[in-house]
Picture 1 (cartoon, rainbow, N blue to C red):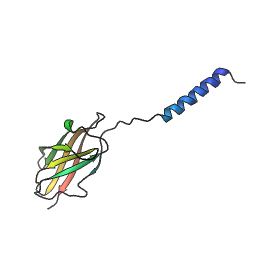
Picture 2: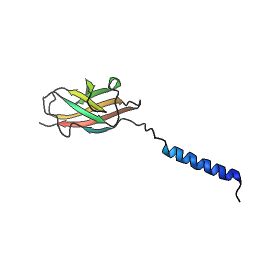
Picture 3: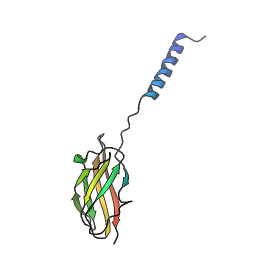
Picture 4: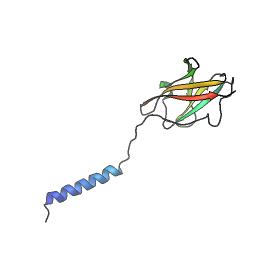
Length: 125
């Protein structure tokens, strides 16, 4: 026969395990781009437009910054605004000559995490 304390501890441990499994998990992660409008709407030369960036979380756009990096490592600040969907950020692009460019972004997710990354793209002639 097992002692009462062993049985009591086993039941408590099992109950605690089930409780932890049943609790919702809070996931905190960096904002990651899941899609862009570049796949469906490539940037045309010399045509001002906007670029949509879709993130996996809500973005605090007032705390976020986006720059265009052009040939010669020249940085141009860009204006941004929230899109219609959760996690959508709209970037205003000026008319660009054909060539290679980089979008350098620093965005804050709603959970406070900072993401600093690059998005390379090409404007085809």
